Length: 447
Image (tube, rainbow, N blue to C red; front, side):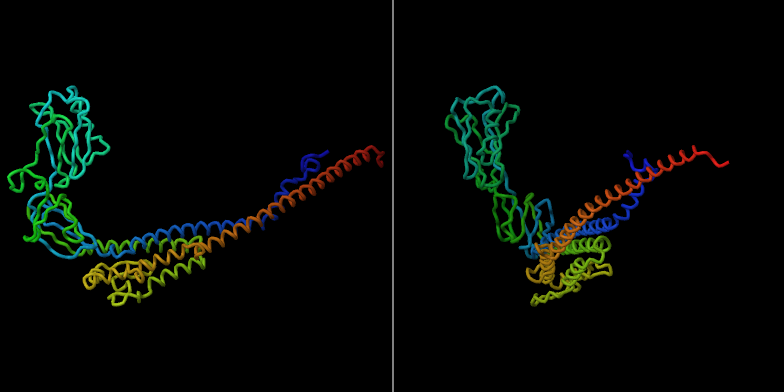
Protein backbone atom coordinates (compact mmCIF):
# COMPACT_ATOMS: atom_id res chain seq x y z
CA UNK A 1 0.00 0.00 0.00
CA UNK A 2 1.36 3.44 -0.94
CA UNK A 3 1.61 5.67 2.16
CA UNK A 4 3.55 8.74 0.94
CA UNK A 5 2.24 11.13 -1.76
CA UNK A 6 4.08 10.65 -5.03
CA UNK A 7 5.74 7.36 -4.05
CA UNK A 8 3.47 5.24 -6.22
CA UNK A 9 3.82 7.15 -9.50
CA UNK A 10 6.46 9.77 -8.87
CA UNK A 11 3.77 12.46 -8.93
CA UNK A 12 4.89 15.51 -6.74
CA UNK A 13 1.66 15.70 -4.76
CA UNK A 14 3.00 18.07 -2.07
CA UNK A 15 4.20 20.62 -4.60
CA UNK A 16 0.94 20.49 -6.55
CA UNK A 17 -1.14 20.92 -3.39
CA UNK A 18 1.04 23.80 -2.13
CA UNK A 19 0.68 25.67 -5.43
CA UNK A 20 -3.04 25.16 -5.48
CA UNK A 21 -3.31 26.39 -1.86
CA UNK A 22 -1.43 29.59 -2.76
CA UNK A 23 -4.28 30.37 -5.12
CA UNK A 24 -6.89 29.28 -2.59
CA UNK A 25 -5.31 31.55 0.11
CA UNK A 26 -5.67 34.75 -1.87
CA UNK A 27 -9.01 35.74 -0.27
CA UNK A 28 -7.48 35.05 3.17
CA UNK A 29 -4.40 37.09 2.30
CA UNK A 30 -6.62 40.01 1.35
CA UNK A 31 -8.47 39.75 4.67
CA UNK A 32 -5.20 39.69 6.63
CA UNK A 33 -3.86 42.67 4.67
CA UNK A 34 -7.04 44.58 5.46
CA UNK A 35 -6.77 43.60 9.13
CA UNK A 36 -3.14 44.77 9.24
CA UNK A 37 -4.23 48.11 7.76
CA UNK A 38 -6.93 48.54 10.40
CA UNK A 39 -4.52 47.56 13.19
CA UNK A 40 -2.00 50.11 11.93
CA UNK A 41 -4.76 52.73 11.98
CA UNK A 42 -5.72 51.75 15.53
CA UNK A 43 -2.07 52.15 16.56
CA UNK A 44 -1.99 55.51 14.78
CA UNK A 45 -5.05 56.62 16.71
CA UNK A 46 -3.27 55.60 19.89
CA UNK A 47 -0.47 57.97 18.87
CA UNK A 48 -3.04 60.66 18.11
CA UNK A 49 -4.73 60.14 21.48
CA UNK A 50 -1.40 60.53 23.26
CA UNK A 51 -0.59 63.70 21.29
CA UNK A 52 -4.01 65.21 21.97
CA UNK A 53 -3.71 64.35 25.65
CA UNK A 54 -0.30 66.04 25.84
CA UNK A 55 -1.70 69.06 24.01
CA UNK A 56 -4.71 69.19 26.35
CA UNK A 57 -2.44 69.13 29.41
CA UNK A 58 -0.30 71.90 27.94
CA UNK A 59 -3.35 74.06 27.24
CA UNK A 60 -4.73 73.35 30.70
CA UNK A 61 -1.45 74.47 32.26
CA UNK A 62 -1.67 77.72 30.28
CA UNK A 63 -5.32 78.25 31.09
CA UNK A 64 -4.65 80.48 34.09
CA UNK A 65 -4.36 84.24 34.07
CA UNK A 66 -1.68 83.92 36.76
CA UNK A 67 0.61 82.40 34.11
CA UNK A 68 0.46 85.67 32.22
CA UNK A 69 0.42 88.10 35.12
CA UNK A 70 4.10 87.67 35.82
CA UNK A 71 6.33 90.16 37.56
CA UNK A 72 10.05 90.27 38.18
CA UNK A 73 11.47 91.65 41.42
CA UNK A 74 15.09 92.73 41.59
CA UNK A 75 17.29 94.12 44.33
CA UNK A 76 19.95 96.70 43.55
CA UNK A 77 22.20 94.81 45.97
CA UNK A 78 21.70 91.06 46.36
CA UNK A 79 24.01 90.99 49.36
CA UNK A 80 21.44 93.07 51.29
CA UNK A 81 18.26 91.31 50.16
CA UNK A 82 16.82 89.36 47.23
CA UNK A 83 13.20 89.32 46.07
CA UNK A 84 10.69 87.36 44.01
CA UNK A 85 7.22 88.38 42.83
CA UNK A 86 4.01 86.58 41.89
CA UNK A 87 0.86 87.57 40.00
CA UNK A 88 -0.43 89.63 42.95
CA UNK A 89 2.43 92.09 42.69
CA UNK A 90 2.29 95.52 41.11
CA UNK A 91 4.94 97.52 39.31
CA UNK A 92 6.88 99.88 41.53
CA UNK A 93 10.22 100.85 43.01
CA UNK A 94 10.93 101.04 46.75
CA UNK A 95 13.82 101.89 49.04
CA UNK A 96 14.57 99.37 51.80
CA UNK A 97 17.02 99.77 54.65
CA UNK A 98 17.84 96.57 56.50
CA UNK A 99 18.79 97.49 60.05
CA UNK A 100 19.42 93.91 61.10
CA UNK A 101 18.45 90.43 59.97
CA UNK A 102 16.74 87.85 62.16
CA UNK A 103 18.89 85.51 64.23
CA UNK A 104 18.51 82.07 65.74
CA UNK A 105 18.54 82.04 69.52
CA UNK A 106 21.65 80.24 70.79
CA UNK A 107 22.58 79.25 74.32
CA UNK A 108 25.79 77.80 75.73
CA UNK A 109 26.39 75.94 78.98
CA UNK A 110 28.43 77.87 81.54
CA UNK A 111 29.37 74.60 83.24
CA UNK A 112 31.95 72.41 81.48
CA UNK A 113 32.75 68.72 81.85
CA UNK A 114 35.92 66.70 81.58
CA UNK A 115 34.51 64.49 78.84
CA UNK A 116 31.33 63.96 76.85
CA UNK A 117 31.00 60.18 76.80
CA UNK A 118 31.90 58.92 80.29
CA UNK A 119 30.93 61.33 83.03
CA UNK A 120 27.24 61.13 83.95
CA UNK A 121 25.21 64.18 84.88
CA UNK A 122 22.66 64.49 87.68
CA UNK A 123 20.69 61.61 89.13
CA UNK A 124 18.10 59.25 87.70
CA UNK A 125 14.76 60.97 87.17
CA UNK A 126 16.14 64.43 86.46
CA UNK A 127 14.52 66.09 83.45
CA UNK A 128 15.14 69.12 81.27
CA UNK A 129 12.27 71.07 79.67
CA UNK A 130 13.06 73.19 76.62
CA UNK A 131 10.56 75.77 75.44
CA UNK A 132 10.76 77.07 71.87
CA UNK A 133 8.45 80.03 71.55
CA UNK A 134 5.10 78.85 72.89
CA UNK A 135 5.85 75.13 72.58
CA UNK A 136 7.91 72.88 74.81
CA UNK A 137 9.13 69.31 75.28
CA UNK A 138 10.87 67.39 78.06
CA UNK A 139 13.81 64.96 78.01
CA UNK A 140 15.39 62.77 80.68
CA UNK A 141 18.94 63.85 81.53
CA UNK A 142 19.62 62.25 84.92
CA UNK A 143 22.46 59.71 84.90
CA UNK A 144 23.34 60.35 81.24
CA UNK A 145 26.54 61.57 79.62
CA UNK A 146 26.74 64.83 77.72
CA UNK A 147 26.61 62.98 74.39
CA UNK A 148 23.54 61.02 75.52
CA UNK A 149 21.77 64.21 76.58
CA UNK A 150 22.58 65.79 73.20
CA UNK A 151 21.12 62.78 71.41
CA UNK A 152 18.04 62.72 73.64
CA UNK A 153 17.28 66.33 72.68
CA UNK A 154 17.90 65.90 68.96
CA UNK A 155 16.03 62.60 68.69
CA UNK A 156 13.01 63.56 70.80
CA UNK A 157 9.90 62.84 68.74
CA UNK A 158 8.21 65.91 70.20
CA UNK A 159 11.18 68.22 69.70
CA UNK A 160 9.61 71.63 68.99
CA UNK A 161 12.49 73.17 67.08
CA UNK A 162 15.88 73.13 68.75
CA UNK A 163 19.20 71.45 67.98
CA UNK A 164 21.84 70.42 70.49
CA UNK A 165 25.56 69.94 70.01
CA UNK A 166 28.61 69.41 72.19
CA UNK A 167 31.78 71.41 71.73
CA UNK A 168 35.21 70.95 73.25
CA UNK A 169 36.97 74.25 73.95
CA UNK A 170 40.11 75.00 75.97
CA UNK A 171 38.24 74.59 79.26
CA UNK A 172 36.34 71.37 78.57
CA UNK A 173 33.13 69.97 77.05
CA UNK A 174 29.95 72.02 77.06
CA UNK A 175 26.38 71.79 75.68
CA UNK A 176 25.18 74.25 73.00
CA UNK A 177 21.50 74.78 72.11
CA UNK A 178 20.34 76.52 68.92
CA UNK A 179 16.80 77.26 67.75
CA UNK A 180 16.09 75.80 64.33
CA UNK A 181 14.29 78.95 63.20
CA UNK A 182 14.98 82.65 63.65
CA UNK A 183 13.25 85.39 65.56
CA UNK A 184 11.45 86.01 68.83
CA UNK A 185 8.86 83.40 67.87
CA UNK A 186 11.58 80.82 68.53
CA UNK A 187 13.04 82.24 71.75
CA UNK A 188 14.50 79.48 73.94
CA UNK A 189 13.78 78.96 77.65
CA UNK A 190 15.05 76.05 79.76
CA UNK A 191 13.93 74.65 83.12
CA UNK A 192 14.82 71.54 85.17
CA UNK A 193 13.03 69.19 87.52
CA UNK A 194 16.16 69.01 89.68
CA UNK A 195 19.39 70.97 89.98
CA UNK A 196 20.48 72.98 86.92
CA UNK A 197 23.59 71.14 85.68
CA UNK A 198 24.46 73.45 82.77
CA UNK A 199 23.98 77.14 83.73
CA UNK A 200 23.02 78.02 80.13
CA UNK A 201 23.51 81.61 79.02
CA UNK A 202 22.61 83.54 75.84
CA UNK A 203 25.16 83.78 73.06
CA UNK A 204 23.13 86.44 71.21
CA UNK A 205 23.83 90.09 71.89
CA UNK A 206 21.74 93.15 72.66
CA UNK A 207 20.97 94.66 69.23
CA UNK A 208 18.29 97.23 70.02
CA UNK A 209 20.25 99.15 72.67
CA UNK A 210 17.76 98.18 75.36
CA UNK A 211 20.55 97.50 77.82
CA UNK A 212 20.50 93.70 77.56
CA UNK A 213 19.57 90.80 75.34
CA UNK A 214 15.83 90.07 74.99
CA UNK A 215 13.70 88.00 72.62
CA UNK A 216 13.14 91.14 70.52
CA UNK A 217 16.82 91.19 69.63
CA UNK A 218 16.30 88.04 67.56
CA UNK A 219 13.93 89.73 65.10
CA UNK A 220 14.74 91.32 61.77
CA UNK A 221 14.14 95.05 61.54
CA UNK A 222 14.00 97.02 58.29
CA UNK A 223 12.62 100.33 57.09
CA UNK A 224 10.36 100.75 54.06
CA UNK A 225 10.74 103.95 52.04
CA UNK A 226 12.62 105.63 54.92
CA UNK A 227 9.29 105.95 56.75
CA UNK A 228 7.88 102.68 58.01
CA UNK A 229 9.79 100.40 60.37
CA UNK A 230 8.92 96.71 60.10
CA UNK A 231 9.81 93.86 62.46
CA UNK A 232 9.62 90.18 61.53
CA UNK A 233 10.83 86.93 63.12
CA UNK A 234 11.93 85.48 59.80
CA UNK A 235 14.34 86.69 57.15
CA UNK A 236 11.85 85.41 54.56
CA UNK A 237 9.21 88.13 54.46
CA UNK A 238 6.13 87.74 52.25
CA UNK A 239 3.52 89.84 54.04
CA UNK A 240 4.81 93.40 53.64
CA UNK A 241 4.55 94.14 49.91
CA UNK A 242 1.66 92.43 48.10
CA UNK A 243 2.84 89.60 45.88
CA UNK A 244 6.52 90.06 46.83
CA UNK A 245 8.73 87.80 48.95
CA UNK A 246 11.88 89.32 50.41
CA UNK A 247 14.86 87.35 51.67
CA UNK A 248 16.90 89.52 54.00
CA UNK A 249 20.64 88.88 53.78
CA UNK A 250 22.53 91.57 55.71
CA UNK A 251 22.28 95.08 57.10
CA UNK A 252 22.41 97.73 54.41
CA UNK A 253 20.37 99.76 51.94
CA UNK A 254 19.10 98.66 48.51
CA UNK A 255 16.41 99.50 45.98
CA UNK A 256 13.60 97.06 45.14
CA UNK A 257 12.35 97.24 41.56
CA UNK A 258 9.17 95.40 40.52
CA UNK A 259 8.08 95.32 36.90
CA UNK A 260 6.21 93.23 34.41
CA UNK A 261 8.15 90.10 33.50
CA UNK A 262 7.71 90.31 29.73
CA UNK A 263 10.30 87.62 29.07
CA UNK A 264 8.53 85.26 31.45
CA UNK A 265 5.21 85.88 29.68
CA UNK A 266 6.91 85.39 26.32
CA UNK A 267 8.18 82.00 27.52
CA UNK A 268 4.65 81.08 28.53
CA UNK A 269 3.32 82.01 25.09
CA UNK A 270 6.18 80.13 23.43
CA UNK A 271 5.03 77.11 25.44
CA UNK A 272 1.58 77.56 23.84
CA UNK A 273 3.17 77.70 20.38
CA UNK A 274 5.45 74.71 21.00
CA UNK A 275 2.55 72.58 22.22
CA UNK A 276 0.49 73.44 19.14
CA UNK A 277 3.40 72.78 16.77
CA UNK A 278 4.15 69.42 18.37
CA UNK A 279 0.53 68.41 17.84
CA UNK A 280 0.74 69.65 14.24
CA UNK A 281 3.84 67.51 13.65
CA UNK A 282 1.95 64.46 14.85
CA UNK A 283 -1.09 65.27 12.69
CA UNK A 284 1.12 65.74 9.63
CA UNK A 285 3.03 62.52 10.28
CA UNK A 286 -0.15 60.49 10.70
CA UNK A 287 -1.80 62.15 7.70
CA UNK A 288 1.16 61.18 5.53
CA UNK A 289 1.35 57.70 7.02
CA UNK A 290 -1.15 55.20 8.43
CA UNK A 291 -4.01 57.72 8.47
CA UNK A 292 -3.49 59.01 4.95
CA UNK A 293 -6.84 60.19 3.62
CA UNK A 294 -8.58 59.43 6.94
CA UNK A 295 -11.71 61.58 7.17
CA UNK A 296 -11.73 61.67 10.97
CA UNK A 297 -8.16 62.97 11.06
CA UNK A 298 -9.05 65.65 8.52
CA UNK A 299 -12.05 66.64 10.66
CA UNK A 300 -9.86 66.97 13.76
CA UNK A 301 -7.31 69.07 11.89
CA UNK A 302 -10.09 71.27 10.54
CA UNK A 303 -11.64 71.82 13.98
CA UNK A 304 -8.33 72.76 15.57
CA UNK A 305 -7.37 75.17 12.80
CA UNK A 306 -10.84 76.66 12.76
CA UNK A 307 -10.71 77.37 16.48
CA UNK A 308 -7.23 78.83 16.14
CA UNK A 309 -8.51 81.25 13.51
CA UNK A 310 -11.82 82.08 15.22
CA UNK A 311 -12.05 85.52 16.77
CA UNK A 312 -12.36 85.70 20.55
CA UNK A 313 -15.61 87.63 20.28
CA UNK A 314 -16.57 87.17 23.92
CA UNK A 315 -13.77 89.38 25.26
CA UNK A 316 -15.75 92.56 25.67
CA UNK A 317 -13.52 95.62 25.67
CA UNK A 318 -10.38 93.61 25.01
CA UNK A 319 -7.78 95.28 22.82
CA UNK A 320 -6.96 92.02 21.03
CA UNK A 321 -9.26 89.31 19.68
CA UNK A 322 -6.97 87.48 17.21
CA UNK A 323 -3.60 85.82 17.83
CA UNK A 324 -2.15 87.60 14.81
CA UNK A 325 -2.71 90.91 16.58
CA UNK A 326 -0.12 89.95 19.22
CA UNK A 327 2.42 88.57 16.75
CA UNK A 328 1.41 84.89 16.44
CA UNK A 329 0.99 83.79 12.82
CA UNK A 330 0.57 80.51 10.92
CA UNK A 331 3.17 79.53 8.34
CA UNK A 332 2.71 77.57 5.12
CA UNK A 333 3.56 74.41 7.04
CA UNK A 334 0.64 75.02 9.39
CA UNK A 335 2.89 75.81 12.35
CA UNK A 336 2.77 78.85 14.59
CA UNK A 337 5.56 81.36 15.08
CA UNK A 338 5.98 84.41 17.31
CA UNK A 339 7.11 87.87 16.26
CA UNK A 340 8.81 89.04 19.45
CA UNK A 341 8.69 92.73 18.57
CA UNK A 342 4.96 92.71 17.86
CA UNK A 343 4.36 90.74 21.03
CA UNK A 344 6.38 93.17 23.15
CA UNK A 345 4.45 96.08 21.64
CA UNK A 346 1.18 94.35 22.49
CA UNK A 347 2.29 93.84 26.10
CA UNK A 348 3.29 97.49 26.37
CA UNK A 349 0.00 98.62 24.87
CA UNK A 350 -2.38 96.46 26.92
CA UNK A 351 -0.78 93.78 29.09
CA UNK A 352 -4.04 92.51 30.60
CA UNK A 353 -5.66 92.10 27.18
CA UNK A 354 -2.83 89.81 26.08
CA UNK A 355 -3.42 87.65 29.17
CA UNK A 356 -7.17 87.56 28.51
CA UNK A 357 -6.59 86.58 24.88
CA UNK A 358 -4.95 83.35 26.02
CA UNK A 359 -6.35 82.52 29.44
CA UNK A 360 -9.82 84.02 29.70
CA UNK A 361 -11.98 81.23 31.13
CA UNK A 362 -14.52 81.47 28.34
CA UNK A 363 -12.94 82.83 25.17
CA UNK A 364 -9.20 82.56 25.77
CA UNK A 365 -7.41 80.51 23.10
CA UNK A 366 -5.76 78.16 25.59
CA UNK A 367 -9.11 77.68 27.33
CA UNK A 368 -11.00 76.92 24.11
CA UNK A 369 -8.32 74.64 22.66
CA UNK A 370 -8.12 72.70 25.94
CA UNK A 371 -11.91 72.27 25.79
CA UNK A 372 -11.74 71.06 22.18
CA UNK A 373 -9.02 68.53 22.99
CA UNK A 374 -11.05 67.34 25.98
CA UNK A 375 -14.14 66.85 23.79
CA UNK A 376 -12.15 64.99 21.13
CA UNK A 377 -10.77 62.61 23.78
CA UNK A 378 -14.07 62.10 25.60
CA UNK A 379 -15.77 58.72 25.76
CA UNK A 380 -17.91 58.46 22.60
CA UNK A 381 -16.03 61.51 21.29
CA UNK A 382 -14.68 61.68 17.75
CA UNK A 383 -11.46 59.77 18.47
CA UNK A 384 -13.07 57.16 20.72
CA UNK A 385 -15.84 56.52 18.17
CA UNK A 386 -13.34 56.08 15.36
CA UNK A 387 -11.20 53.68 17.42
CA UNK A 388 -14.31 51.70 18.39
CA UNK A 389 -15.30 51.45 14.73
CA UNK A 390 -11.86 50.19 13.73
CA UNK A 391 -11.80 47.65 16.55
CA UNK A 392 -15.21 46.36 15.46
CA UNK A 393 -13.89 45.91 11.91
CA UNK A 394 -10.89 43.97 13.20
CA UNK A 395 -13.19 41.74 15.27
CA UNK A 396 -15.35 41.08 12.18
CA UNK A 397 -12.27 40.30 10.08
CA UNK A 398 -11.04 37.89 12.75
CA UNK A 399 -14.26 35.92 12.31
CA UNK A 400 -13.88 35.94 8.52
CA UNK A 401 -10.24 34.93 8.76
CA UNK A 402 -11.09 32.04 11.06
CA UNK A 403 -13.80 30.93 8.64
CA UNK A 404 -11.37 31.11 5.72
CA UNK A 405 -8.74 29.14 7.64
CA UNK A 406 -11.31 26.43 8.40
CA UNK A 407 -12.30 26.34 4.71
CA UNK A 408 -8.68 26.13 3.58
CA UNK A 409 -8.00 23.23 5.91
CA UNK A 410 -10.90 21.32 4.31
CA UNK A 411 -9.86 22.28 0.76
CA UNK A 412 -6.25 21.26 1.37
CA UNK A 413 -7.32 17.89 2.73
CA UNK A 414 -9.61 17.35 -0.26
CA UNK A 415 -6.75 18.15 -2.67
CA UNK A 416 -4.43 15.77 -0.85
CA UNK A 417 -7.04 13.01 -0.88
CA UNK A 418 -7.70 13.51 -4.60
CA UNK A 419 -4.07 13.62 -5.70
CA UNK A 420 -3.10 10.80 -3.38
CA UNK A 421 -5.86 8.70 -5.01
CA UNK A 422 -4.55 9.73 -8.42
CA UNK A 423 -1.04 8.83 -7.36
CA UNK A 424 -2.21 5.39 -6.23
CA UNK A 425 -4.14 4.85 -9.43
CA UNK A 426 -1.20 5.91 -11.58
CA UNK A 427 1.05 3.67 -9.57
CA UNK A 428 -1.28 0.73 -10.10
CA UNK A 429 -1.53 1.46 -13.83
CA UNK A 430 2.24 1.61 -14.04
CA UNK A 431 2.52 -1.75 -12.31
CA UNK A 432 -0.11 -3.31 -14.62
CA UNK A 433 1.65 -1.89 -17.68
CA UNK A 434 4.95 -3.31 -16.55
CA UNK A 435 3.35 -6.73 -15.95
CA UNK A 436 1.69 -6.80 -19.36
CA UNK A 437 4.91 -5.82 -21.08
CA UNK A 438 6.68 -8.61 -19.24
CA UNK A 439 4.03 -11.16 -20.29
CA UNK A 440 4.03 -10.00 -23.90
CA UNK A 441 7.76 -10.34 -24.01
CA UNK A 442 7.46 -14.12 -23.26
CA UNK A 443 5.19 -14.76 -26.23
CA UNK A 444 6.75 -16.24 -29.43
CA UNK A 445 7.77 -13.41 -31.59
CA UNK A 446 7.01 -12.97 -35.22
CA UNK A 447 10.04 -14.04 -37.25
